[in-house]
Image 1 (cartoon, one colour):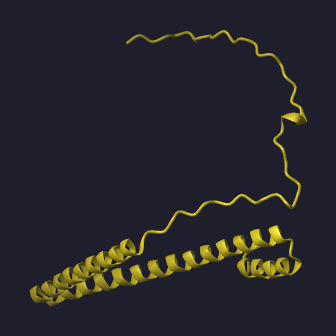
Image 2: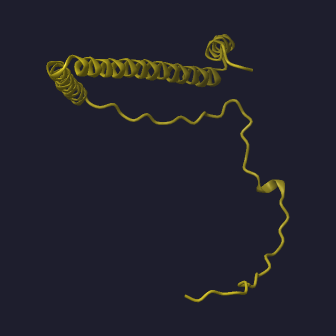
Image 3: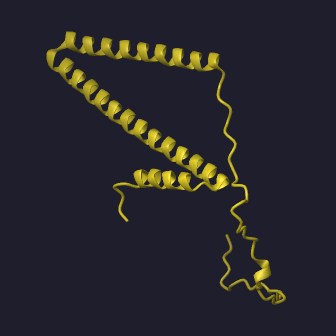
Length: 149
């Protein structure tokens, strides 16, 4: 394995100097009448598919709960202490799962509220409605209540 003791020097070809001008900047739209870009929503699944997914999730949950409860009962049959430890671990898991589900549900509610406020803002800007702007200001105040300035 050969090593090189001197640096490699590459000849740089000089680039022609070009002055930056304001004409190089992208265009800015100043009009309120400009359409606000919207994202297309993904289409929802058909009702039969959603029903199948819910039913399979419920069935899988029932099988899992049955297996865990059988494990706890088996530990209680082997020894009282092992059963109590297993029951305690299952209780801690269920409490943490409930906390996680609750926090995710609250985050989803907040995101849906933000999405509703964005939709209202788009409608108000397109209509140029002063009463709508006042209602939107109230919604934004509710949204940012309790946050540091």
